[in-house]
View 1: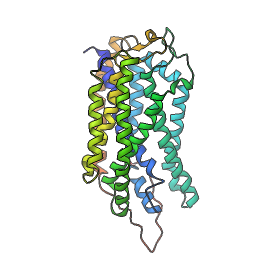
View 2 (view 1 turned 90 degrees about the vertical axis):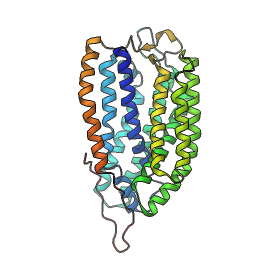
View 3 (view 1 turned 180 degrees about the horizontal axis):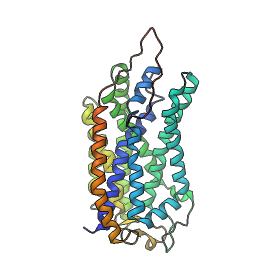
Length: 348
């Protein structure tokens, strides 16, 4: 395998790790307005991700930095052409971060309601735009002969990319619900489990439709054969089907399957994209590929050494953090005293 293809695979790994971990983060935020019934339960639901959410976002930084270093032409075209979309993602992530930090600054019900809503809006919005943006890489955007984006923000929207955005929302909500079934107790756990069962249906239907459509788009708009894109797509559909079955009694395995379904959705997109990194439409010949968008061989070799040293350290640290914060949290509020403010300051 040449270094260009190797680094394309490494970047796929980074994006997969980001959506695997941030996916259930987003899902927890999406469920905040609907599942908890009192302030104590809201505190518990936020606490389930409070120590780890910022660590999860590290993978986004790593994915962006790796793209910049390994595929500068891809980075330049994507980050300039998708500038407004990325600003929207940044906006949604910022208000979500602020909601964690500022919600605990006051016990006022109105103040807390505002930041709870901000967390939910940020979670829904970021998931939607990520889906639209990544799907647009495969569906095709206007590129000139130099690989520069020549379209507008609205060129990112197509039936396929909108389906991707909606699918990401449904998939992350389901993923977040299964995560909460492993971290909560009591009445909150019962409601989360019931919501997970409900969410399993749209996640399965939308996920299957999107994965099947992705294979079709790869064949008709990216000159791909049925194989290999059909393999991760079929496995992803199977994982979501198993998750929908297992969520009715085997919450641990259901979470494993939603995690696998999330990863396979990302893998299907990028497998359908390779060997191109950005499809050009309507002039297919202007598409960016792993060869014409990559850095020099020496740069990729140095990056490989750096990745070999640093990525295992990040993985070990995150594994340790999740082990430390693996215990369930209770949501029962004392009857005689109001719930005390709970800080969600990051601890990792």
